[in-house]
Length: 193
Image 1 (tube, rainbow, N blue to C red):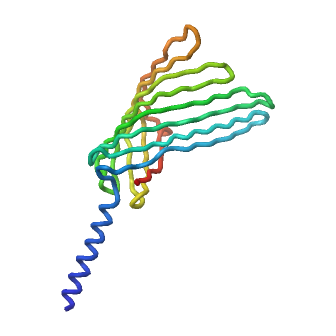
Image 2 (image 1 turned 90 degrees about the horizontal axis):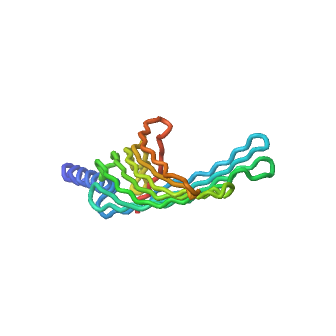
Image 3 (image 1 turned 30 degrees about the vertical axis):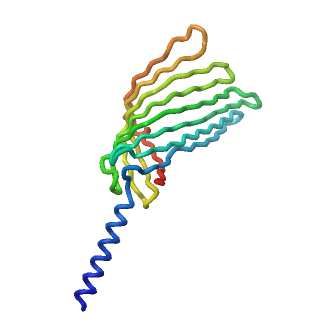
């Protein structure tokens, strides 16, 4: 009788452990939400500056290892010196991304992200609008804290960006960059639906 009870307990605990590990991580057809929100305000003497940025992202796993998605963003900043506005900018971004996860069904996974974004900034003081796009590759890590929540970290970027202002005679600005600076580490929260 003791052997039967022991066998049932062993089967039950291994089944519970197996089902719990299968719910963490990502699988084909999973949907996730992530993004960033930043708000800042600073003042030095008569100078004050405020800014905000909101960038939501939605992704969908088209296979066990590959997710595709869309992202959008809005932002703005305003600077004042005494009671005079000296800077006032707004921005908009929209884009798409593709990600490869090295071990998506596990608690911990490496990520390789390729993203494309269109962006527009509007300088309301100088009355200059700038538009452009960027293409960037960045590596990262994903770690599940629970069945639905994970944290992400990314480091560095290899990218290309081009932009042009609407000023008469303005030429495009093209930038190829490799960023391996430790200040470029970013963290995010992911919610698996």
